[in-house]
Length: 377
Image (cartoon, rainbow, N blue to C red; front, side, top):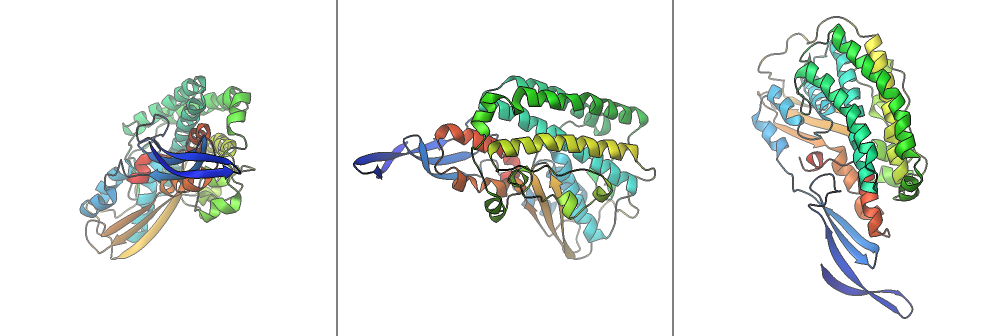
């Protein structure tokens, strides 16, 4: 720490400011992030997020990988929710190749992405409770998450980085046993959501630590480019699944939960409500699961999309995930850029942390549900 210039807080009152490094190894930062905080006593006068500790250069790596191999790299961005990463890249590549996944593959994409949304939000719910000081919800949330990971393991052999959604479709089919287990999980899970509300959502201590803290007005959230539950928590009804539907989302009946004031609690509770909506979507997709092929026709082992560019985006667990893909007609992307929602959501911290107390930093940071693998890539 170091002492900076004096800060005059009022007539006859002079206070030194102090610079404090929060991180990069702080256990509550949900990844390797450093926050540089300038403090006047307990109050933050300046904050800046320092990123790059987890940089792996995946966008550059994709310039030397085939399109099929690129799908593997997408798993490593938001490793808590890898299915939407696979999907966003495949949708962009399919636009370049002018192909579309068959109806059964699209339904399976929806099912797996929504299950992944639930699993991701369960990680958030459990770890955010620990951030605030409540350990028990973590045990409940991870019990249910393990059930989803068991379904994934049976489906594609992986529990974290799936490589399940492929160019033109999906890697493997589901059978009657898998769908029965999925329905069994959904029936078990729905009452658990009420337990989460009793344990955490409406816990008086949790409410005191999150209600009215870290408020982001709707206009400010939009100006900073927030998306996902961080934007909807401020009351802005933007969801890619509704505004630009993909994979047949327009055929499913679900609501877009919104917050009221944009506080930490609003962002938290939006995710809790989104899990209820994901259950509705998965149930509807299972009930109307069509037959047919899993892969589109004409997908080569070494695809060479025609020269051009394409952009595709999906409503990932943490926001609007976009892929801008450029082809020069070769076997590897000429250029790829990721619009990573966590990276964009993180920037507003330098604005909303000013004026907060140190004790509120973790509550605000945790409410953003940041995964640094997606921030740094």
